[in-house]
Length: 302
Image 1 (spheres, rainbow, N blue to C red):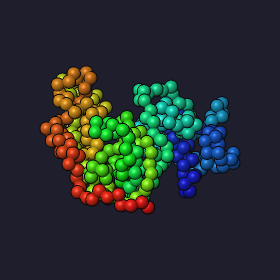
Image 2 (tube, helix red, strand yellow):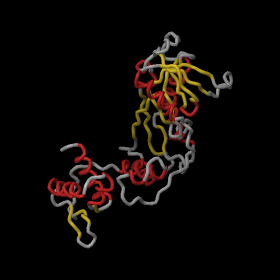
Image 3 (cartoon, one colour):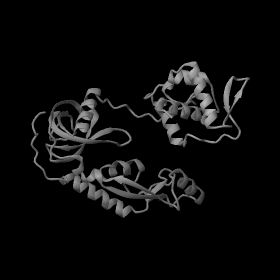
Image 4 (tube, rainbow, N blue to C red):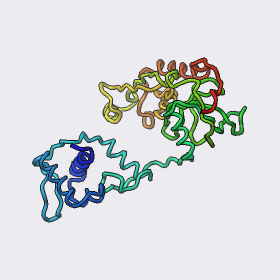
């Protein structure tokens, strides 16, 4: 089955599963296909998934049959909700979503960080090409209160739940660091790298955070927290890059001693909290001293 047809077949099943019905106009509007092609797609779906949909003369739509069985999709609630979230946040237009009847939704407001599109394009280009670039960066360092040009070799991107950063080797401080994209004011002078992402120990190595329900919750409350966080036998293991450990712990409320927090607000605790603290200390120490020792030369312009 060709990719375009496969996409439309999955779209038909998505609409039947989540919305209960579909017609030719849905395919025509979303994919821009002709009326005959939309009819062929619906007929092909009936052939490949017999008994899954029936034509309702009153609504002039195909509706999901009582014995509907998924054949082409492995639906994920998070995929559906991700589409709903993207529309609610305004990062996607309603017509770009596979959801036909979008329920009213809103998201907790997060101020949009001002990322220059040309800055992002040039940093992406450096990541893909394995190059270094000079960036005009505004840090919050007391010793460097004004923007300065500095050379970095970016190799990955990280998101802390609020902000995007470029994980990069800093040629000025001779170590891997996080450079917030909104604070990169300009990009110039592509050059050779000094260190590649393979040398970034904090990025390439993981630590397992083991979480469980707060012990002060009732038995039924703990049970729903286990369900909420996908726990099994009272715990869940979260593999986290050392480079992202601080951000993850902060978002989960686990930077301090979570057991001392009010269980009504802090629903989970780290079951291996001593190991977590040791891992965080290790990450901070490696970040401070730098994991690799290499020359800080700019490598010349390309």
